[in-house]
Image (spheres, rainbow, N blue to C red):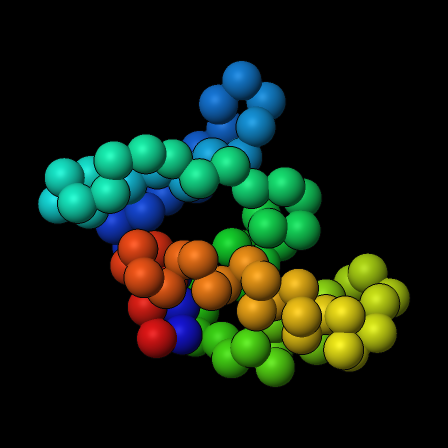
Length: 88
């Protein structure tokens, strides 16, 4: 999976915000605010990833358990799949 190139990360008022461009802006009317961990995962999704590779990166960077990391990754990705922000 990877992020959809029609969605970009911008800094707005000191916040990390994902905004749609082009046709995506017509289908997705809104923005997504990311916390520090969400931005970390977003940056990794510039290249092809799996849930496991994202979880491994969280474990290595934040020193959390694999179980907690995988749960966090799934919670991050699940609402993004139906919107087309993340492509499987």
